[in-house]
Length: 206
Image: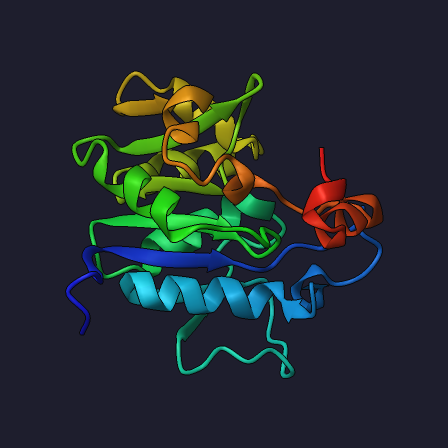
């Protein structure tokens, strides 16, 4: 085990989305010739002592490299259901949860978020007024709140951050930009236009 491997946090790759806006399965997208799913899984495996992949249902052609695969405990609950399932499956007290559509996920950003406030139940970025729930740290304490939200059919993860019973640390753009890798770690791909932008040469990007 590398001394840089984080041993008290589980990396959770949430890969059960329906990719409605993309029009095809985002788990098989490639950016600059590299599978986004494969790159994300490799980065999590290099960073955490344990990595779990959360799916909505089995998919034979997805290579998970020996990582444990779990399936949504609450069906049809979207990302909230995947997050809840990941928290239940994790053996560590906290998880770093990330979606499978972030081609520029960066280990330095992950390590900063994991280490900046180890007492918080949630460490989440707020960029341009929007929370980034699928690139965030959660403690196991969040599971019961997510379950209650799902039972109420409130599937918006951001609602969790308003709970007075949880300690939530919110990171702004200034703190994250100071890491030197910018905010590209949070860039995701929801549409064909997003994919084209991700594949554009660096000089063409805004």
